[in-house]
Length: 164
Image (tube, rainbow, N blue to C red):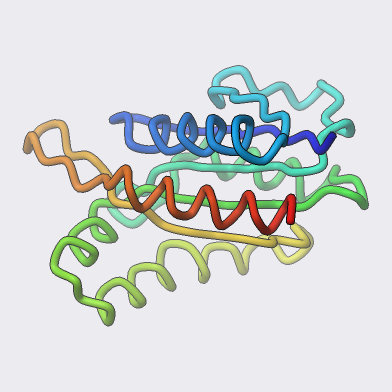
C-alpha cells in the first residue's frame, strides 16, 4: 500500500480543510494511506522515509508563504529519499478572487507568482508531481474564497495519478 503524509500550515482554516479533504478522498477511494499532520508537529529529527508521497500545503498572506511551510520544503529538499514524490498546494485570497471572477489571466499570474516562482527556490525538491492553488479565507473580512468542489476534484485527479 502506498503511504503519504500531508503537512499543512493553516491560519484561517482553508489549507486545513483542503488537507482534510485530500486525505479523506485518497484514503477512501484510492487506498493510499494518508497521515494528516498540522505543521506545528513537524519534527526534523523524525524519520519520514516510510512515506512515498509528501504533501505540503500552506497559505499565502500578502504574497508570502507561511514560514513553517518554507521550513518543511527546505527540510525535504535536503533530506528526501529517492522514492519520495512531492505534491504542493497553497491557499490564497488572490487565487480565490481570480477563481470567483473566472479570470484565467489573473489566476495564471497569481499561480505563477505565489507558487511556481517560489518553488524555483527549491531546485532539489524533486520530483514535484502535482501542484495546485485554492482560494483562501479572510477572517477579518468574513470572506470565504475557498471552494470545496475544486479541492475534491483535484483530490480525485491526484488519486488517479498515484493509484491508476
